[in-house]
Length: 421
Ligand code: NIG
Ligand code: FE
Image (cartoon, rainbow, N blue to C red; front, side, top):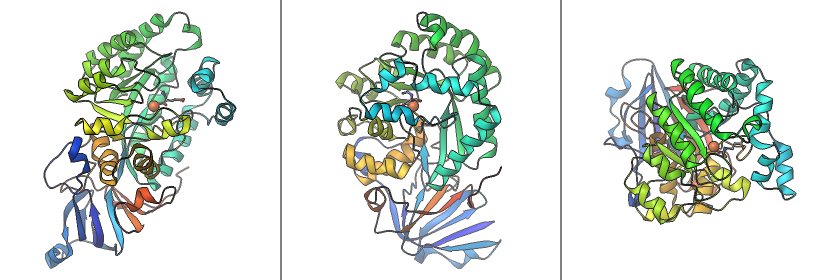
């Protein structure tokens, strides 16, 4: 099966040479081809170039579907490298309580927040969790996401953590987009371990990690290393245990303070450290010599009115930055990566080009998939989207809140959306 996209006004984020991520000044570089064509064979990108290079030989064999992209831009799908989309229920009450003046931490201390979701998750069947998560999957697919990382972390006991991870595995097996799974047993301290956190850490290390690994349920391991949650020392123990089972870290760090999370993440060669509202010179220096992708979650900062991560300072210091949605019921109930792109420009002063790199290539690196996704390159998986008519690459972040994604192609197939229940 072959698909030809022709008369593309601008083909965006083309990479001719393999590149795993872009950092510093290079983040402002995005290659595009104006008046372009692109050919997909089966599930991969086979060929692309400018329309005047489109030779007859490309359109002779096989069944071919032609899509006219006049006036439209074609992008590689968004890669969303940080989400918690398996959850039992939304949390509107906390939203209202925050409007009335409570903080995220105060709500968490009163048994709301993550613990509230954990209680409800315990009562929810695997099947119901799967179907509600798949609704969210279809929602984000329509909004241009073609790869997604999903975390556990609303279980907080062995049985329920495994339940969540099995749901993620089912999503991986049935959803058309690329999925990676992260074990986040250390997401919050359960009520019954409130005064005995080190025993909860023991449980994560001695019981959860070995079972998660023996069922091969996770690609990565995460810890919420922040003030009021897990300390760097506890995080260190958990990451060390995960490493023994080949689980590379992708951790929550420095959302609520200079927690030491970045340092411990880099020490264990984390693939990414995420949130990063609090980043000082020391943290920048540590990240500079690492293979760890600094990942900012603008949806959470927007929704919780947090301090903004010093993104410009990080990029100016030569670091790469990725932007992900953090889709979850407590701090970012949206997986809209176009809106995340708008926030990148508006709140973090990023250029549209920087935002494109931050939401495609750099998030693909942060998910460990940038060899096969995250840009328009020959041989990469054909996950991409076609916009509505647009002026140029600034249009998508400029029209914040608008739906500019008209057609979605995943694994070389044009998607029609509908639920499978
Ligand atoms: O990334 N910060 C920790 N965890 C999530 C929030 C989870 C929740 O509130 O349910 C986050 O923001
Ligand atoms: Fe998160």
